[in-house]
Length: 111
Length: 255
Image (cartoon, each protein chain N blue to C red):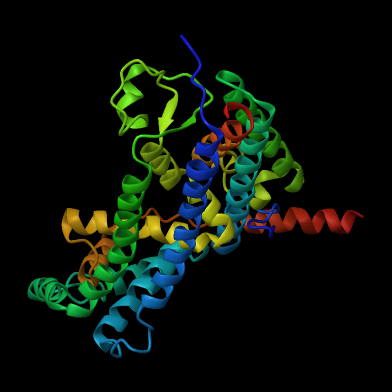
């Protein structure tokens, strides 16, 4: 990750657009990766119903905390708002999660 | 759930897994085919100098807008006037020019060709795969999603099976194809690089804009930029900066 904004300018937000997009892209990348992996894991463990979705959102929360730690707990150095870390890419990953969850669950448990 | 269906393992080996693998491979193939078919930029005729000039003016105006708070009010006003001053401003578009640009858009065959190529590379493989799935795999219960759903989803998930007694969470092979179609987008962004997927969605959005207001042309973006320059509130940031710098320097001196 590259710093997108300076911490020194408290009153004027200065964001470097290129670094910001690259940071957001790395968030999306890690979230997509995590959603696929967690889908496979949930399928193999045989989660059904609500448990699986709870598992997904738990994983995403852990990912948020990880991203927060990665940005050294100063979100505004790297991003323009908190929502980038908390919600960016969560819903986009849900579809992949459901697909891989179903796939792994079917292969392991249904047949 | 009344009773569990027992699915043959042969269905897994010969329907579920092949279907998924084929979907992934077709996605990869489509990516490379569209890459091949994209006309190289050198082949397109050298761009019209007027268009280039207009594009540059828009970029300059945008830079002014983004950096507005870092120059004094007077300087900003002068620059703003330079861009938006009625008919003399750089961002002014004569009426007949705007119409001409639109006409040119419609008649430019290259642009339409490019768009059609892109669309074709999307639509043809999809139709082919759908036909293939229909031909080989119609009527299988291929999978079971691990969460319950309401009756409303029957049409979506059990496309191709006309039984009303099967539990809704069982998925027919045709619907598994659709699930793959939408769910694999994330996987493609991982294995093919992000630009692939996001570019695709961008294209879709662009098409949308086209349908709406015959969207992108230079005249349009000029006048849009002019409007946004007009409404911007100038707020000089640097007086605060000086105070900030003074604080920092004093702190340094103390140490």
